[in-house]
Amino acid sequence: MRAASLVRMRMRTGTCRAAVAAVVAAALLAGCGGSDDAGAPAAKAEPNAGDWKPWVLGSGADVVVAPPPREGSVAARRDEQALAAAVRGRTPGQERRAREQAKEAVVEPWMSHALQFVSERVKNPPVSSRAYGLVSIAMHDAAIAAYHWKQRYRRAAPARDDALLDVPADPSYPSEHAAIAGAGSRVLEYLFPEAPKARLELDAEEAAEARVAAGVSYPSDAEAGLKLGRDVAARVIAQARRDGSTRRWDGRRPRGRGYWEPPPGSIARPVEPLAGTWDTWVLRDGKQLRPPPPPDFGSAKFRAEASELVRIRKSLTPEQKRIASFWAGGQGTPLPAGVWNQVMLEYVPERGLSVPRQTRVFALLNAAMADAGVAAWDAKFTYWGPRPENAIRDLGLDRDWEPYLDTPFFPAYVSGHSTYSGAAGRVLAHLFPDDAELWRQKADEAGISRLYGGIHFRSDNVHGSRMGREIGRLTIQRAEQDGAQS
Image 1 (cartoon, rainbow, N blue to C red):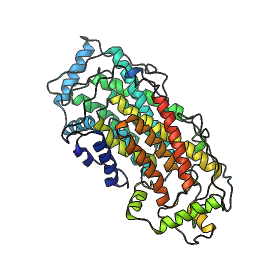
Image 2: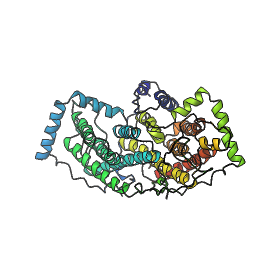
Image 3: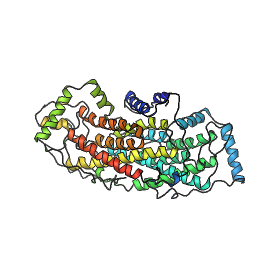
């Protein structure tokens, strides 16, 4: 594997660059065993990808794509002439974009936008994981649809001596890169209306045009792909509008010792109390895996867990502080689910996966984490468990106690980090078995980081991890039935 890829850390937030690089480096060293100059294995053709099971579409045929220009027709000749003109007029920017597309994960531009937009908003973990899920699933379904029509029309890709890139292994019409760009950009526009819509539209068009300028797609491939992706996005957005995420909380909550209250000195409202009622991808609903209640406030078990955090806070090591900070997921970052996406944006390009398999990785990962967010929030706002900062003071263990990390504005039980990471770790261990132990270790590390940070009790982590792993198992069960493993 190329160690040079680890230098390409375009971190879009305050997350620790060196720590993400270390995760990826560990995975590459564990999984490759070759020289640094060996390069990623070449992706193979995917003649059956159009038959894989989508998430929102009924099948790859659901969104109809008109035929390409008939060979030998006036339209076909014009298409070839437009291709030749695009190659002759190729700009340095188009060349750079095309080469980046060949090296990066195919979802990179659109996931990067999502990471940035989440980082610029007020901290809201379930909204962020919902967004990552919708964008990833839209791109995956667009890829499946594109591959369905590729096999239907079987148009050979251009074979030009002046092409920048190798001739694709699969038919060229419609362009899968354009379809993914059309789907990803449109769903981002829906999710982040504050973002510059015109810029997203232009980014999608430039992504499609770069493949034409590189000489590996006809202009009609790109046009059909963009339209297909946008049509898929419309289906995904229509489903998203019905998922319950716009429901309004009535403001009622339990109060007093033993229940969540804002951190001392704050009057913050709880973040997204109804997120546990949103629609899910692999769960029946958010309460399917609801855990038993947390330890009773003031009980021997509760006091023991609170005392543990007091001891940890007094003796934090530099390594524990590093772990707590890396997984912090605070304001100005892409939040817990975003950290996992950042790692995979660096890891996936080294695996030699085809375009549809790349989109499948991100769809499975983010569907699992979206459901993890819903399930964790169901538990949080069923039990309204207090945060350590309030509980430790209320118990009289330390009237001035403060955690290492800032206390979030939502209940403690269960840990969202542990639920997200339990799901992510299990899914990634299935998808990349060579590095399974690494992903399980990182999931455990994400959970324990919350104890180091002083913002969760041990029971929060135990039950969150358990729920996350079960969500991961259900996601794997779906993956085993989606047609991609046959």
